Amino acid sequence: MSERALDLAITGVVPVRGRAVGVAPDAASPDGRSVRVRMSSGLSPMARADLLSFVRGADAIVTMFTDRVDDEFLDAAGPSLRCVCNFAVGTDNIDFAACERRGIVVRSTPDVVTEGTANLAMGLILACARRIVQADAYVRTGRFSREGNTFPTGWMGMDLCGRELLIVGAGRIGYAVAQRALAFGMRIAYVSRSRKLAFEIAPLAARRVELDAGLASADVVSIHTPLTPETRGMIDARRLSLLKPDAIIVNTARGAVIDEAALAKILCERRIWGAGLDVFEHEPRVHPDLPGLDNVVMTPHIGSAEQRWREEMTIVAVSAAMDGWRASRRAE
Image 1 (cartoon, rainbow, N blue to C red):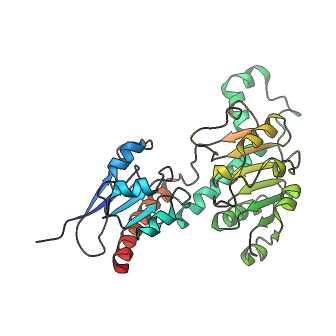
Image 2 (image 1 turned 120 degrees about the horizontal axis):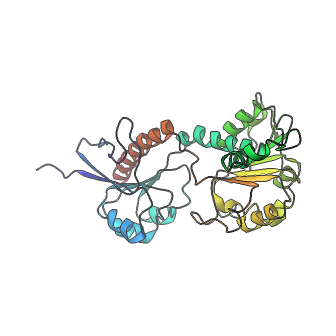
Image 3 (image 1 turned 45 degrees about the horizontal axis):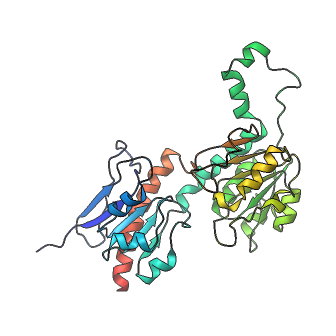
């Protein structure tokens, strides 16, 4: 009698190259048996009760960063679960200790999010510096037709050439953002727990600084550190007060790295030039003061949302989930 098919559950709708949205990807079992792939049918995150019901009986699960993977989740999945792969670079939504107690392998998709996230970070920097979102609204609402562009004093932006970019979190994404900033003539500094030679040699020629000193000297700050107990709330009111009056701060990492209420306060008081936020402390909820401000550009956590890279993430996540399942079985 043949063994039952492996059950791979995907808790969100993931893109598959060459297929319509909503069509599940194929998966190959490491031991040659067939794989049943079932995927969420909704574009929004599942309600908790629906999520727990959906994962029941899975051998491997591809989770979204919005899914809280804890004892309750693992209990709901049941004893057949061997691997969880997060469809994201971060894994702060996963209780590693709970997974380890049960012998469940945890994987993620770090490399394939680099270029898309770096592109968005640079886009947010440019949008803030040149007031692109506000200028777009000025045209769309008819003010340009009525008032002109108020040349030569209107719509003054901030130049980037010769300015200092501080990278907080000197990993792959931080490096990619620094590479892009070089094209705009920016100087690079970085904050890291350890020295990163790749940042200090050409072409970046970056200098390593302590966080407080770097915040005080930077013209643009780009956050790329993972969310850990040490980095949660790391950019607090005191550290935000160190920023220059014409500084820009951008966060495409995790929202809780910045004290969002403190950031909203200094933006309301016009104590810095502006901010670009792709992530939020309590997302999808946003601090109520932020939407009404014209000195903040916000996007709904779309860092890696480029078609090429999201399709690649699907391939990597499915393969990692199957490989993790095999690794867990070997360890038994």
